[in-house]
Image (cartoon, rainbow, N blue to C red):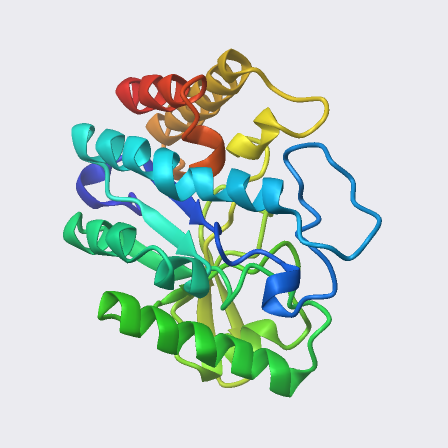
Length: 258
């Protein structure tokens, strides 16, 4: 029996990351500026990196409108993994996400690392994200994606705080259950190999490379699904990355292929 409705062969999870405005900054009391500097400037001093801050804001000002237009044109409902503070600071985008019928998944309270947090601090971090997203969108988040790493406490805390699913996993092409103290939570594996950040890591994909890889991934998983083994594909994109004029066409072409 198929896992998906109407004998569908493949479940496609389009994940749009909203991190801009929630990254590390001296202005927010952090020890240094955001280390993921897409301008290629390595700062040794703890000073504000105004250039990189503006580069992140490109995602909200220019990238988001392009992404939202494509999702609407292709009738795609996406999961927006949003750092709560980023969404607070982009109320127009938050309204569009809600009006478009998209889902908001928590990507932390701010876009900072939680792997070094003790249990009490991590629990508060999760609660702050829930309260913020509920205030911004009118609904609490049901899923969680950490920034890179989780702690030994993360899944138990998510269960205790009422979450339905967790995305910090890369182990499969299908969701699965995690049973832990206090209950169970669905694990929705995320994917890094087809993520659009491959277009600015070194060595980087060109938009054409990324598009072909994403299409090849989709086609192979669909083929496996047609052979009787239902699959899920996760495709992660970022407003400030895929939203550039030289990259957005690749996203459009992938959605058209799907």
